[in-house]
Image 1: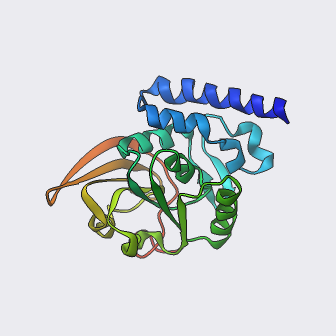
Image 2: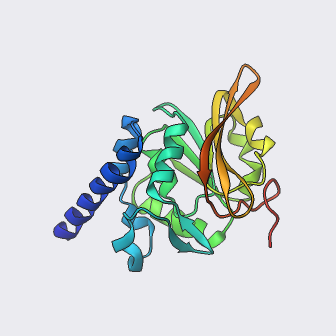
Image 3: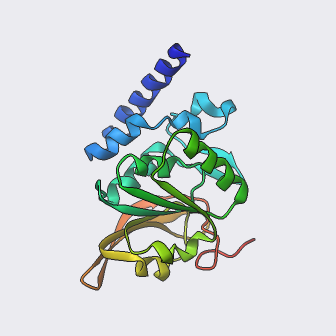
Length: 219
């Protein structure tokens, strides 16, 4: 088991150096998180040898664990720190939430697919990620009771930026969300400062669609 653990440690370090640092992600908190979280435990046993590859992988329910670099890019764009409270829309495999949990005070994450919600909650408990709070619900509505949030990240493609999520940002809060059609999107960063909204386009990306009241409709 120790040899297996060391093998994954080497794969993880290579992933950080060649896929993440080499593409310009420099935030030391983000890089440390990626060196810490065992990505291979967030995919099925059949796919563990591919877990550190430079591509997304299927996790069931027609969902994927995103390419490591895009997770890193989105995490860095959130500009998060140790005292922040972050909301994630779309728990999925749990990998993005686990990365965030290494950096911030508390992560709130919402998943609308029950099988993924149950599976991922169990994994968080197994890995002792006690600062992750989970919810089984329509994530496009956000989590009003726990708002405002210092940062919000959406891990699926929306047809437009959900206003309800902007409303749940704290003063100075940041929202990162893929926006576009059902096949390709642009990664959009929203900053809320003194009541004003600043929007930045971070470039092209491709996510599964965000389904819910304030996203794409089911089917």
